[in-house]
Image 1 (cartoon, helix red, strand yellow):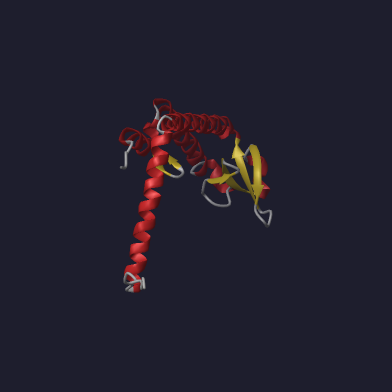
Image 2 (image 1 turned 30 degrees about the horizontal axis):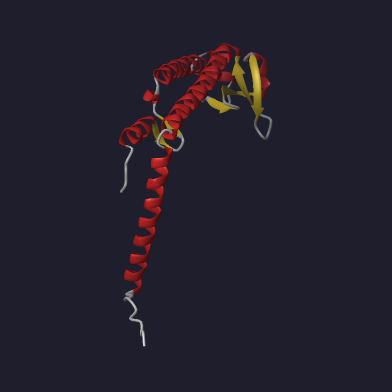
Length: 174
């Protein structure tokens, strides 16, 4: 007899949205960290957009914000590298464009990176708590697994027999 662990299954589905996606509401700390990340992302984009649409526009190869090594950067024409103070993270294949993280957003990008680290730690805590909860039902889950394996095998044989138009053999016992 299958014994579904409904409460545990519900909690896992509530917290884990996909193989690589954890719900914001998996924990109150995760929700707060992600809210801070969205705010920080908005601040970085706002600062960079003001540069892209302001005086820095003439120094840019393209009026876009790019990502290099997980850091927000601007594509600056190489001849104007001294006009945009900041850290150079990359350059184009031709060397005509430098991807510079402006000084104005370095601190914000650093804070965003710290939030990403906190987010990962909180996700690990949530997964550890779910694993601990699942461990309490280890024997029950293992029994259910064995039963489901047997049922899957029975249904697979039935589907194969149906696909092959097979019939039960009659053995001659004489």
